[in-house]
Image (cartoon, rainbow, N blue to C red; front, side):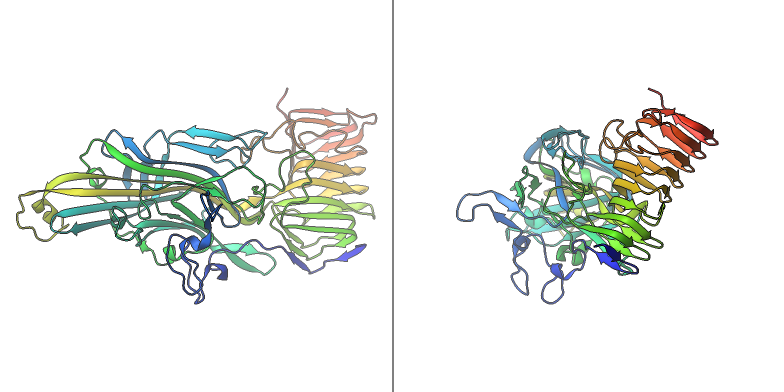
Length: 575
């Protein structure tokens, strides 16, 4: 409109539901089971809540999975019936809350090349498949262990050891825990009945601040592993069902990912056992068969059918950065944002010829697109751009392995270890069947996301930038005078999270296109330019004044001005 008054107003586009949202509860308010289950009562829809289905229900088809919102499959790999030349395919070592793990080698996994990869680092064009193998493991895991010893009939012994190893190298606000699930299928089957399932939960219990409602929203993600206890050795791939044209994304069948707190976690059994050093190495058979799977995914707060995540839009030519899902767009001739609160998941786009004011405004989104002006001759950019916003995002790598073995001992030894309490002949040799399973998760989950201004256009005679910001794609200053009072970083990363900025892509330079009519330039903060910085020497008219009282960094710095004053630092990498 011509005159838009948002003083003390609020606009919000919400993210998707999670944690204890009613969508994840049955008719009595109890968590649904999102893994394999046969409950069709009280609002439960049975196995996987009908999120797994055939592409051709009437005949042979591909098994598909519908993931929760904001879950993006990244890589997948599995082996069934693989051979290991030794008794213990996986190594688990440690004590307390500091365990190390190493998986059997030579697992090959497949990854989609994208800015959101978890294994490799890729450059455009994206979308191809990449095959990887390498070391799977790490150290510093928080642990939960479970063990059981079962006698079947008169002399068939089964000893089970299971572990859940978790860590998160992102935000300290993310809490995590693992539990065991007392369920197996098919009924009466072996070895499934000797195993428990496993589930891990990553949550932000103190919440993500919602600036609109003034409350905290709890973020959560749960990973269920059915490798040992549901259809052992029948693991295969699921294809992610797609609502838009895209390449196929795979998911190992044993993994279930849900945003909602599942019954498996709510009623799961905490670890109750501290392993002894030899427990994971009791097997005596030197040739071992094992099953394992590896799965990586990312989560994002953006609710979109498209397989893209934190970026404002697909990184393609001629694609508007202002069309991301979950976008709030405000366009006005005269706009008043004083004390306004706007929250969006995809992005916020503000266009105005005259910004009346923005005192105490809060724009809460990780992607901003701004075209601001002032018709009274002075434009002050303040309370528009935050350095970061609170969002629950990141990546998760999940690995699962299960195998069996056996060892020979005596009944007397089992009595000494308190596994059994009586045997007719304590000296007689017995065989104990071993069952092992480990779920290992490396997560990088954060509660804060840096804010990126994809494009910033400023129109006024005099412009003052008083918000710190990062401008990735376009900076256009149509002013006679510009002063920078907070840190301004230009350019885009070579790939997501690299910390390395391209010298040619995005807003990599400062030249006459950035500020074609600028006469007076003053920098009080840190101005970072990954490429060339040309202040006046690439146009017909030089600057009238160029003053640096902060720090200016660039590949090369060239200045053509009638008056130059430097009371700060000029840092040039040099070509």
